[in-house]
Length: 130
Image 1 (cartoon, rainbow, N blue to C red):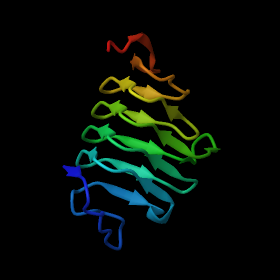
Image 2 (image 1 turned 60 degrees about the vertical axis):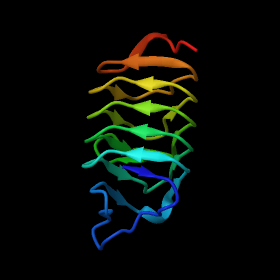
Image 3 (image 1 turned 120 degrees about the horizontal axis):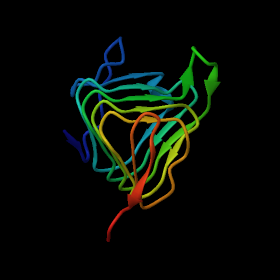
Image 4 (image 1 turned 90 degrees about the vertical axis):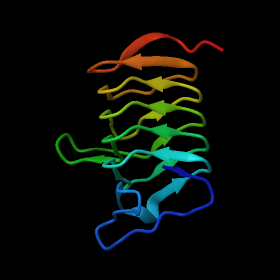
């Protein structure tokens, strides 16, 4: 679902009208023309920023806090980046402008702009072609 001018509405559990969920939704900064797939979970305890024209596939997990390893920090998805379905983005990670994360990837480090990363853990595959 593309969210151009319609702001998400959150129920008491943080679920939106498009069936993605945000905990601590007051810490979510959402840009224009974003597309977030159903069943995506966003934990914005320490802040999540999703910039303009970002596409996130179905069933992703985007974290700003991990209770397993006690990592925390703001997570940023820069303009025009794409995150494939069922991917996990760990806390304190920045996905660079125009970059792509392949489906089912586990991202635990920053991804520079204009690169494609895939796998578990995610690794560099190639540069994004203009």
